Image (cartoon, rainbow, N blue to C red; front, side, top):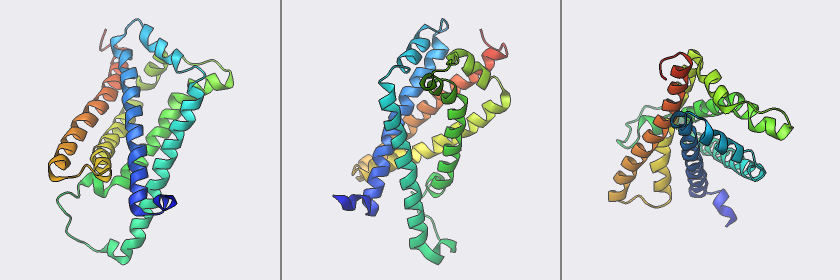
Amino acid sequence: MANIFKSSIGKKLIMSVSGICLILFLTFHMVMNLTYVFDPDEVVYKTICEILSMGWVNVVVPVLAAFFVIHILYAFILTLGNLKARGEQRYAVSNKAKTDSWSARNMFVLGLVVLCGIALHLINFWSKMQLQNWLGGVEANPYQLMEATFGKWWVLCIYIVWFAALWFHLTHGFWSAMQTLGWNNQIWFKRWKWIGCIYVTLLILGFVVVAIYAFCKVHGCCA
């Protein structure tokens, strides 16, 4: 059983499971953020934020952080392992398979962009809300924080780039995880690609809508 942490298949399995868990978290996060758009009275959004400030979150957050750390750690391990296995061949030009997409070839770089975006997001939101709650400080109003952040055009542009990187990273990661988990026969391989593409597109569009809505609200482009 311990060999699962050492074998290539085992490492990919850990990457897949942690990645799926993170996609589920992003789905919850996106749905929560959408209440900002469809809840003008701020009742639902603030209620959710208050729930997330309760004690049980102190357990959930470290678990979620562990998934992030594990996913990132094994991404580095697998990438370094692949580079080491290729040796000098990594400098050679070779024909790419049709399934070797741009996302697949640049998964590590996309991951770095995503990681930088996560750091920015933690600084802009988590440090001013959940962290303040833990430290006994005053939490920022979630609505005001949303508008103060996305109201700046350059911050909005950075987030859009981050969302785009997330889309590429997750569309490849979704069907790749399904393949690692064994759902990779000829029929379901194509289906999972389509399902993943549609699911991730809707997921990222949700985040984009919230960001643009906040920007438009600040600048009087919407009611």
